[in-house]
Length: 65
Image 1: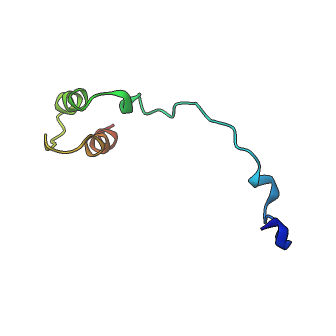
Image 2 (image 1 turned 90 degrees about the vertical axis):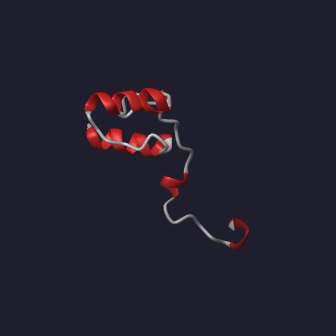
């Protein structure tokens, strides 16, 4: 696109992006197994379907916090 004379709209935002390796208060739930998440949901008294996928169980866990 540069050969045709186009310029980036916001040059400052089109620069390289640094990696952000900080954890954002998710208590590292992503590294837990489905069984561990199900156990926490049971301890908290949150009803769930055992056949649900891990991402659905994570949503329930986050909503329960």
